[in-house]
Image (tube, rainbow, N blue to C red; front, side):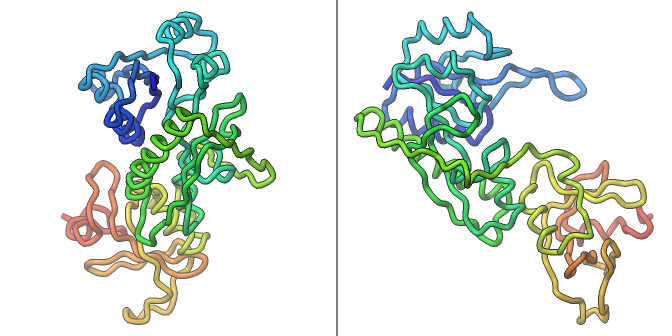
Length: 312
């Protein structure tokens, strides 16, 4: 099929790659514009653009999609059969209706659960034991289109955002390929979403990342998992920010002679840091003090202390 692929982050790369490997004609890649980053304002571009350039695929980077007549005409001139969208922006109707067979999106949840920008993160934050992937036909209302295919994905107890995200990107690529084949053969049976079962997965904000010690140890542990390694859960102490990348739940600290810790109270040994919560105790395993690199707690305690700050 003649496909225009739309995507931005590394989650999209396996899907783009599998379509090329299966001899589908990628007419173009559409991704977000280049950005100036860092102190030197060095221009950087998306990993999807980099992959496209390396594979000699034309790249389009519109600043806006809605009301962009020039972009619409460019897409029409390509005469695509299909738009495949993986982790991109919201497409307006005048764009997603251009191809012969319309457009479909790969979404990182088992829709209608977790509609929104951060479905993988929220599945972990909420402590789910499974999530899923969905390909659906684009409609005007975000993440509400009729479903082509779905696949459930088990969430392992040791999964964090990075590990689950990476595994789902490859499972999702297979689902994308199956969806394209289905559309190509014309044997399509679309499933309508049940809006009464819908839940949301809003964008992750700094407020969400702040650890609330008045929640249970399990809830905090799941927050850490869902935000690791980026943007990372964090706590503030002595006017400094500490990011937390890995944690462990404890029911008690009897072996250390500690009966309990109140919510937000901490206890540290030469190698370990524990925090009290509403229910249970959480151990910080990987930490990043403000202005420093990420490290294990044991490494951190060789040069720092939560009680005293920097140790000389």
